[in-house]
Length: 256
Image (cartoon, helix red, strand yellow):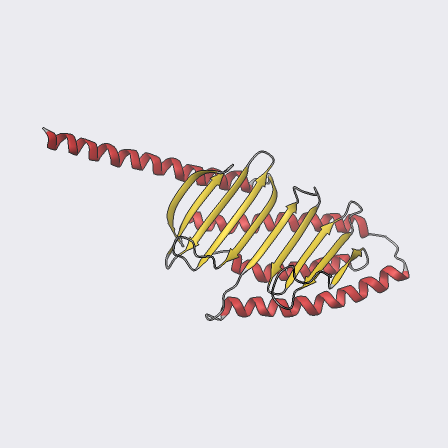
């Protein structure tokens, strides 16, 4: 009799676990559906070597929509990732996912879609503002110098990123923010990686405000004076093109 009860309990527990697993997977699918239909306001991505669940590398994705805040954290192991999803600070999903699973691929697609959406937002605004616009000699001079500085600095940074992604002795780390900053309500793209802290803000005039710190010591925030700072119209599109190249280089390390 008691043996039958134990058998029934085991069956019940297996069914309950399966239903719970389905519910959790549904939560993850719903997150991707919500995030990919364009209702994202602000995105924060962190790739670091913080040891979480015994992994050497973690990837954290925070997304803010109009009504909700999502946080997705994945700890990379050999062939799988321990993944957790929070919605408004409530844990709604935790499971091990194979690195070739459809849910990991959904992560990559979400990263591409959200980045492309923000890039288009900047490009449309810059095109609208700068077509048929006249510039002062000071704007031309400042824009020319700034563009040259950006080209040289970003080229060196891109090479460092590529090396960190291809050399097994090195580890790629970055902080990446984009969208409408909830604190300022201004669209911005910010990248903190290696020695550079780069921020591009889209102004109400549809020009861009650029602020870049070059922390040569590697201690973020140690350099109190920006290496490049200003509001730019002349060459603004070309400067943004250089930022797109940098985003493209680091996006390889952001995705699985």
